Amino acid sequence: MPLKIGFAIVSHNEPQQLLRLVKTLNSMFDAPPIACHHDFTQCPLDEGSFPSNLRFVRPHIDTGWGDITAPLAALKAFSLLRKYDQPDWFFLLSGTDYPVRPANEISGELSDSKYDAYLDNREILYRGLPPGQTAEDGGFGRPDWIPLAYYRYCTFRRPTKRLLFTGRLLNRKQFVPIYNHKIDCIIRQFQFNRPARIYGGDFWFHCNQKAVDRLLEARSMRKLVRYYRTRMNPEESIFHTALCNQVDLKICKDHKRYEDWTGGGYHPKWLDESDLPKITASGAQFARKFRDKRVLDVVETALLHR
Image 1: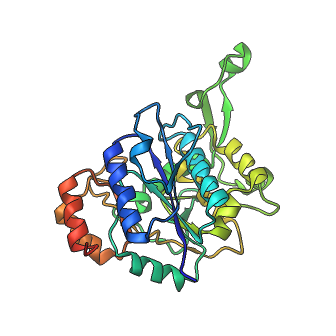
Image 2: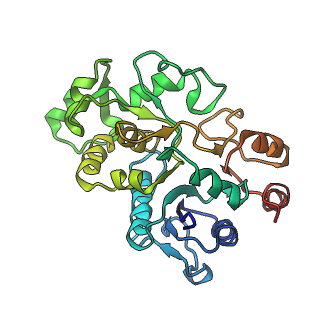
Image 3: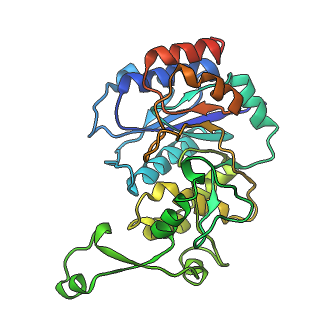
């Protein structure tokens, strides 16, 4: 039986680029199941202009990057795919992603895969790189990301005394972190029956139905959402912690996405034609971020042979 691949897309702008991505996926994968969580508040779009195999999440969530709403939007798209289509593999994409390998190569690699998920991840430890990890030039492997991630995801947090006495409504920026590298004693209480660890990395990944079912397990995910709701950039840790603590899941740290972080800052750079040789050499299945239609034309010709 042919492998069934589904796509969960999280978008908030550029409807025409989103439409192009959907049409390309349809042409490559023979109209696969697609679920899209689009933030209609930020950017209206004409649903009637999109192919019928795409389902929009309704009602949508008002999303914001660096906020718990981004992973919640992804979960809604995963849930829609799981309910109606039950694909073998689920790809999480943004509207600026684009395939960079032919469909038969992607399907063939997944058919022979021994993994349940392709997820960029590393354990978040106190003042150090995890065993076996080398410092990379950029992105989530850079040396300064580990202490930043520890501050975000592993520190205790309590409200300031002034806020405690006044009883004012608390928000994320009004919490004071308390550093403590012995985190297992608190982590094991919020979800798992054994000492759990905190992981982090790139938000974009793909996984099989077995792994998606773990993410959609309501009780455990509610506890994780509660834990990450007051934390900065939870999309860079919540799914990683959920999946990497499952002892029976085999997870590949190569998420098969090409990104270029050499420009510095908090986001990968916009890709252009000069990046195509590096994309090809990387073996990635998708790349991001794209915004130039002419570059996508070259990608289709040079990499997708279309």
